[in-house]
Structure formats: structure tokens, C-alpha cells
Length: 316
Image (cartoon, rainbow, N blue to C red; front, top):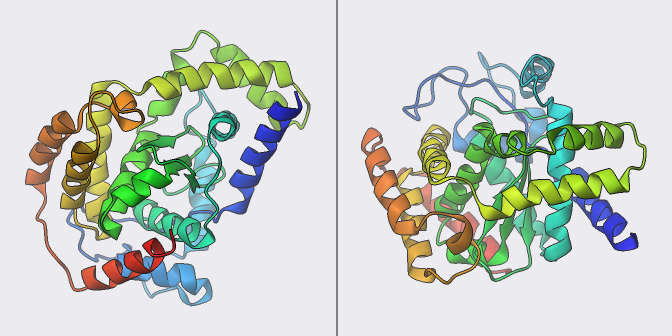
């Protein structure tokens, strides 16, 4: 019992201590151009560093958009309300922290959360009930997880497998895509324990203890979580990730580069991605088709992104 409570406490700390991704107005264009209401990658990082100086003429403020989007959340996803999705996701994160230690590197945590913010700020779902959160697991395994509540967990091994900020962004974009496509929620909805899960979440939100119900909740979600999504869901997440990358200002081709790195570092006996995802070769073929809709360009900020990436990676 003490161990379970400790795991839940770590999950709660993780969920509350990391910076929240914020929202901004978004463009309907998928061209990646800096149209009215759209934030460029450099602007996003500047807003994170200097939030008080982030307002620009003809652009809805971050604070206003967060408020508007948050109010709209109550009308969406009536089957599993955002609050329940968050608490269910936090339970899953707690289960993962029971198997992996958290890698303590403040600079890396901040960097990954900044990239995450950049990716979601112009997306269709920039705001969740308690925001998007990224944390690193102290494991050399190549893997990443996403929960219904917006928690993204990436292993140190997968971080080290990347070779640029854009390739790291591709990993995060894939996990964000799962969340925005509601793949974790779809997995929960297929569970026979859906009613128990929702009741457990409601109990948690009221601050009452219901460890037995929560244990059943965690086990049920994690069984679906650890076995991986369907091949089609993974393909859809990759396709959506290409759009997220492009709309943010990252090179969509980075997804292809990252999959090639994974292909070179995994085999059919590998744990992590090798167990929970389709083979990199299958995903590469799907991404190559999706990339036909985008133009891969090396923009003027790519050197700055690489410098930023190299500075963080030196401290791993």
C-alpha cells in the first residue's frame, strides 16, 4: 500500500511541477507560413522565455485563448470528461513511474516541454484540462508513452537516439498526435472496466481515498497502454505528427529521419518501440507517402535549433 501511494505521489508531483503548455490562436493553413493569428517557432520560444512581452498586434493573447478554449472543453468529449481523462492519465503515469525511475535533468525537462509547447500552440487542441506535460524516464530502452490526460513520458534512451531538435520534436509530435486523436481514450472506452475507471477518477477528484478502485483503474488502462495501439492508429499518429511539425516550423522530414534512426537501433526482439509499435520500416513507408504533401526546407533558424539541441544533449 505504501508503495502504491508513493507511486501516486510521484505522479502527482510530476503532473504539478512541470511547466504547462499554453495555447494561442491558430491558423487553418497547413503551409507552415506565418499568417495572421499563427505563432512561429521562434516566437513560441521567445514567449516561453519572456511571457510578459509575448503579445503581438492582431494576435489573440495566450491568456485569452486559454480561457476561451478551457471554457469550450466542458462541451466536448461527454463520454469521458476532460477532468476524468486527466486523473485516469495521471494514474497511468503513476504506474509507469512504478516501473521506471524519473531521469532528473531540469534543463532537459524544460527543453522538451518548450518543444511540446511549440507543437501544441498552433494545433487543434492547444489546451487540455491540466495541460501537456513531458518527463524523461531513466532507461536506455527506446520508448515513449502518452496518457489520456496529456502526460508524455519519453525514455532517456530515445532522447539519445535523436540527432536534432527536429527529430526530438518528431517523437513528441507523435505522442501529442495520439492524445489529440484520443487514442488513449479509445483504448479506455473498449475496456469492460470503464464504469469503474470513471468512478475511480471521480473519487480522486473529490479528494477521497479509493485505493482499490484506483489500482483496478491503473491496471486496466496500463494493460492497453503497454500493449500498444493498432497499426492504423500508429500510422494516423505519424500522419498527424507531420502536420504538427510543419505547422510549428519544424521539418516534417525529421519524422522520417527519426524512424530511420529507430530502424537502425531496434530489431524484432527489441523491447520498447520494437514491442509496442509497428516496425520502423512499415512506418517509414507510411510517412514517405504522407511527406508528399509537404515541402522539406532548411530554414534560417535550423542552425539555432541545432545549437540549442547540442547544448542540452551535452549535459545528458
